[in-house]
Image (cartoon, rainbow, N blue to C red):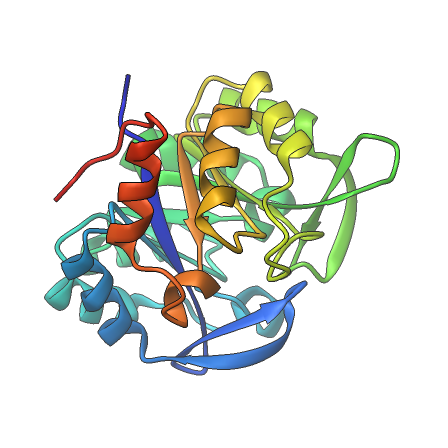
Amino acid sequence: MLAKRIIPCLDVEGGRVVKGIHFVNLRDAGDPVELAAYYDREGADELVFLDITASHEKRDTKVKLAGLAGDEVFIPYTIGGGISTLDDIRGILRAGADKVSVNTAAVNDPSLVRRAAERFGSQCVVVAVDARGRGDGTWEIYTHGGRTPTGIDAIEWVRRVEELGAGEIMLTSMDRDGTKLGYDIPMTRAVCEAISIPVIASGGAGNLEHLAEAIEQTGCDAVLAASIFHYEEHTISEAKEFLASRGIEVRIH
């Protein structure tokens, strides 16, 4: 069995890490590179940087951030937000990132996933999926930082991008984001059962029990969290020790 990964997520706005609820009401959580270096030392398995306003504001992607992080971080890291072309992806990977996350651009032009996988390898291509429940047991994809409903069914979408060559899905529940009520277990389980590529569960982690529940009840490959780590409610080491105590395979650094 592959070890399950713990991945702190750093939502970046205006050069600072922020965290909100349901993608809004943001508050400051620190400097992204300093936090990233801290999590590296603490034993995080990977990191994700998301420029959460990039697609909405049409800003350039974080090539500079990729380079700064590359000087301080020695675990794999993904950068996403406003990435829309192969040139964007090439620049970020060349600057030091291990993976690139695409969301809005992939929905607008699904061929981007295929072309990126062919050019850079599926292992570099993460498709971020922000989804909200419809109230009938299905989930709808949203883009532009959760601002734009698409009418696209989440399960159909993850199957399609897997076929196009995506190497991993980063699945965020907009209903649970920032609430600390736990991950959306039904949605995460449905996505994990629909595809064979790795799934990162995101949105709603409020305690260590939630991390374990997501892994035990959905089959996800990794759990992503922000608030519980940024505000020092728990450390990466505590999280790994807790998961190991539940019989979950984790990497102990």
